[in-house]
Image 1 (cartoon, rainbow, N blue to C red):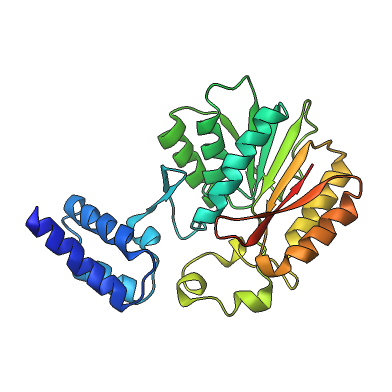
Image 2 (cartoon, rainbow, N blue to C red; image 1 turned 90 degrees about the vertical axis):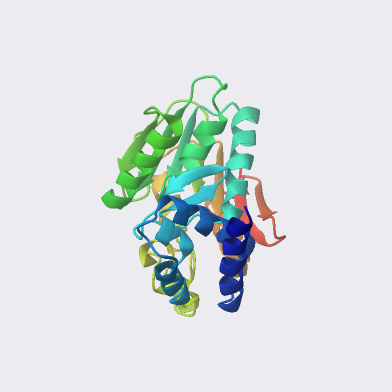
Length: 269
């Protein structure tokens, strides 16, 4: 026990020295990881962390909504702020009797799978999850098998929702698409620029290119959606709101703050 605590404190000290965030939690995860992976040295992990490689890519996993998800350098690392989308989407599904959920730009599948995990006792519904990357969808399917223990989600390699056929019943679209304006993206931390996939982060010049295309596809397909829940960048929240208002002038559009009290989400209903 004393030896284990000493290891954790030593790891914590290193993480503090390199200013690694959430060092209390990460130090314990590293300690447990080293117990299981005895062929991997502590110094090797320290070297990679010093180069600002995210711990989640080193371990291959991340905790999201209390669930362990596999991640690779092809997938974005899910952020804790995004958990709010899951819990509030589940509330919407129950309240509005949603029958179809579409997770656009699913990545690791963390949103769709977490929603499915929380809807075990709800009446029948369908979940579709799309992504443009085949590699990413393979990781998402592995996560589905590990978490749900069965095939429940319809995984679609797709440019947003272009191949989704019209659905019957109340539909919720959840989208955490690339929304960081290109200029802002180029100034991000080295741990993001050097390791996380640009395809999952860079939202073009305004940060709104993907959302504009999504709205156009919804309009073109004449999909009757009950609600659309989006995550966006705080600095462009007003522009995101204006874009949503342009396409849905008669809908109620709300700006929702994240757990850090930053305007992060747009709900259209």
